[in-house]
Length: 178
Image 1 (cartoon, rainbow, N blue to C red):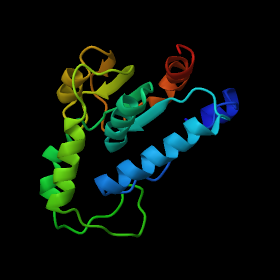
Image 2 (tube, helix red, strand yellow):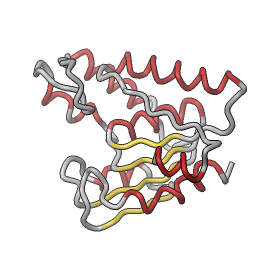
Image 3 (tube, rainbow, N blue to C red):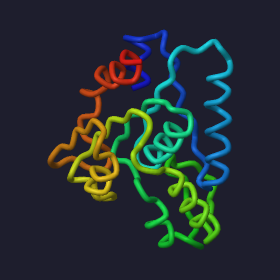
Image 4 (cartoon, helix red, strand yellow):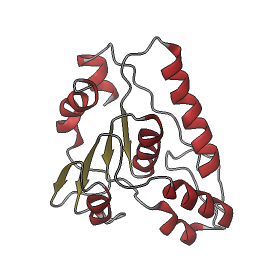
């Protein structure tokens, strides 16, 4: 996406923050980042794009700040799978060297954040999901985003095979309908 924007839409600022693994810190840092963009007055429209846990955060931020978002194989209820990782030594998804451990408090915090996402959703979303996702069951996302635009494909995987074919339609969805 970064390369496609640089080549075809250089006026769009691309920002891909490293999301902290702890829900309360992630919430705080992502809200501060976005509120900074929105208050700067220098940026045009803001759109969100996220995959897996990033999809959850895009939904949370989209609802809170009323921003459109594209969600790729998103985690819908992360607090359901987090308990399996409590106390384990984990590494960030980006391969960074810093280890972390989730606590029961992190699971409870995530549950509270999920509860803030009341139905029906207030913002505008596009779900991109593949049924072959080996990590998350896309039926959860299909149900959660039931009144939103959805593209659900057979096969694929959690990394969303063939993502590049959606780059231009994502830009259209996020920035040309506002």
